[in-house]
Image (cartoon, rainbow, N blue to C red; front, side, top):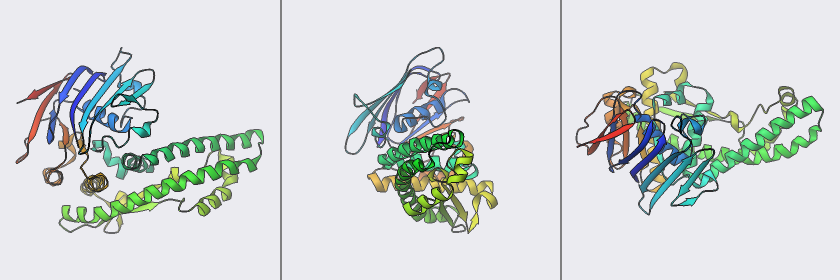
Length: 357
């Protein structure tokens, strides 16, 4: 799988830009705030249908413009394709010229693994960062996961609204059972997807991390959820109903899931060093690559934003040794050379990309 062409119009600081890519390693270098990460964002948007940094689609439209267009041409082992996204008053997504009705129809066309400076928050930040990591990863492989996630979110919002109506308007408490049964159905589907994925991560990550650390460290993940069965979650919702009414929101559920990482049986976020955090996130990303390959039979596209700042030379070398057959798109501030690698280099300056021969 690889992207052959990117065409963007009125996107961030790009007025009009076409970029031809190669199958192997593509390096975009330049000073900060020139538009390097915007290229990564355009690819991510075409894969996931949303940005990894913008809260609103309007933030990605060039200042004083109304509409932005992103077009990505890609090749997979069994087909070629073209994705077009139009950002304006609303977002319209097209795959091979056909307008999509649901975001889930986009997922899986372009598979990616992204590595950004903010990824350290997967380990150091709150549970929402780890859930987001799971959501991005699983959605690419199992589009129905996103469908269940959306249904769960809508049902959760409806249940929370009704909890407040009970508290403030004395609505019938027994009607909560309607929302409870729906919430449990979607929650268990999500739980099963997450557990399967984290089990697969654990299978991969032990050997990956052991190799990176010269057999000095054992890395494992532990999934934390209170939705392990329909019966258990229904019991929990009923048990906490009075508290939920008082608070006006659902205090337990799949929306509170988390996972914890341990190095040599010590909790990473508490006892781990900065170097151990960076090595662990590297192990996690390599495990992602391998799981996607196992699932679809080809490597995803690897997006490495601000590559030089986050990994030292040893970790960079180890990562690139593991991705010989993947297209890699790298952004960095200084031009870098990689030994024994076929690379294309692009200079980025003030919203313009220049290919260097």
